[in-house]
Image (cartoon, rainbow, N blue to C red; front, top):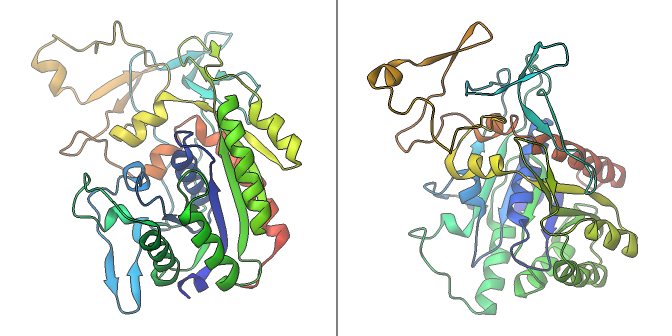
Length: 373
């Protein structure tokens, strides 16, 4: 079986569409990679795959090799440079004694009801521990174009899921995250049957269930928990996505979709509540436009302060911040900032949230053990 090189398999489930399950999967993968673990993402959301878009792999294609498919490499294992802070206007904070604390960065604490605060970024010290590699595979990488529709009946979906589980040649992978479609459809049944019959003992570590605070989403997630119990899949925990929005400029918190519903549901079913994930617009800018997250870069009426300054503004490739010149970021032909997604993610305030979530998952799975040695 192609999963022989995989140590832990984790399903990412949601009972309802639109709760940000693929976004949670992506950030779990990035966080595990930053912790030094080799990670794979298997996207079995056949009719609405989002993983290639989130990882910037839309132009990638799967390679056929003797014995199966090779997953696409998102990034190899390597040592990242120190965290980069792009030069932007109004991007420095002031301490109480008037000294600069560096760029603004909200710190999203790991909890649905905890306020978000603004603080200076985490350590700027050089990173000496290599990150883990990240690979991914999705049906979208087999389609002729981004707009190709998948109009398949249940038996063909079932066959495709089984092929993904048996024909992908994963490199040595500590954690394989499987991004599933919403609900409990043919894909889920095929996935559960195949893994429960062919996976090594203890290899299927369990499932992470994603919800939002709204009552309608939580009601559907209850069905997902019951699905896991009926199929014998352990629920590793619940993540409440969209758990409030906090303005990066003023720090005011708004609970757009309510709060605490996921935590209450987890308590009701006796499963672990892994944490709440706030809405962060900078995360959207990172995956959609490749922009490294910067906090506190407030523009007047959304306009760049260099507009209308002529050619001199375009030629100046450096800014001065606190008496030091800081290079502006380089962009590719499509206007996306160059650099690895995992490197830029370290500047995202959500990185700290997922560090806490993944630490809980790793501790839980390491305690279970598995048959891969």
